[in-house]
Image: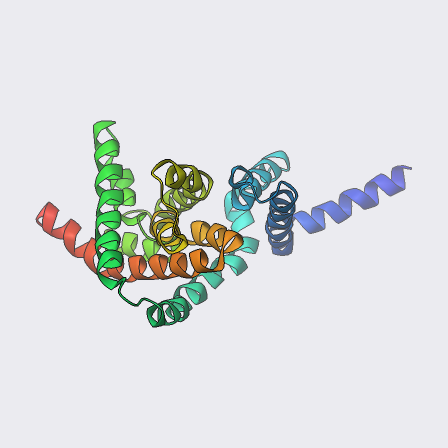
Length: 244
């Protein structure tokens, strides 16, 4: 019995030191999240990303794995963020083909939605007395995480903090978006999808695709355009506002 326990302990020591453990944990946690989401009838409350985040956080806390150690394995997934950012060109291209006479209202919604996201979050953070790093992260979190991290570097604020804010925004938007849109009487799928893409980024877009194809297409279009416009205008706007 003692020999078996020793062998198990040696295996665990080996696994805990391997980056593949963190990668396996990340993928397994997301698989569990998707399974729960599907079994709950795709209820937005059971968002798979939120479930995966909780599972990973609890797991690395229980086993005592430092975050830098976890990131050694998770960076393989993180690396794909750059590829995903470039791939935004595909839904943008496809979305333009079916815009018809919706260009003007969508552009107005894009600019107003992006501005509202930035102004409201920065104002709330400032009123609560947040420091400069947090406020700077609020500027950059208004677009999808990969682009937001690049904006954060240009603003000299923490990309990691920005990514956390962006992911939290996406999770909350994916969970609450349906209820907010229902409350204001928005029924057209293209309107709902575009709003969700701007407000909740990639996680919201994933949610939109799981509900309706048209909503998903417009969500990806909104997310992509918001990222492109934000990458150009946010650094310029912040520097102009701060006089730097």
